[in-house]
Length: 137
Image (cartoon, rainbow, N blue to C red; front, side, top):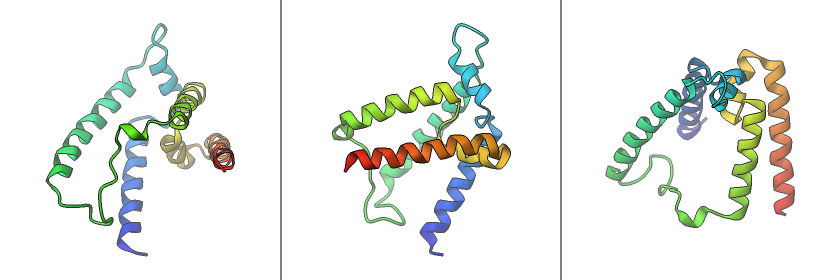
């Protein structure tokens, strides 16, 4: 196993642990955040706020680096990345997130906590990804 793979596994594990610790693998908590006019749960707002702080620091660090450790250059998003396909996919993602209360990261982390219910979502997610790839061709 090379260093890039090990770093990816460590980062993914840390991300999943953070999602589980923050309660983001609980679909009811996510739906509670989206229920603005009912029993609103602000937990997700705090998780997002924490993520924004971490990303603000990461952007500052990235500006000072000559390049990434395991790639030849940084792959940063820009305005040309906004395609109809991306916007449509983002809309479908949001709809699915609101209905299921899970998105890909928490769903994979939830496989450890509630494997059966999370597996149903992950299987549907993988099928959707495969369907999107077939449509692109």
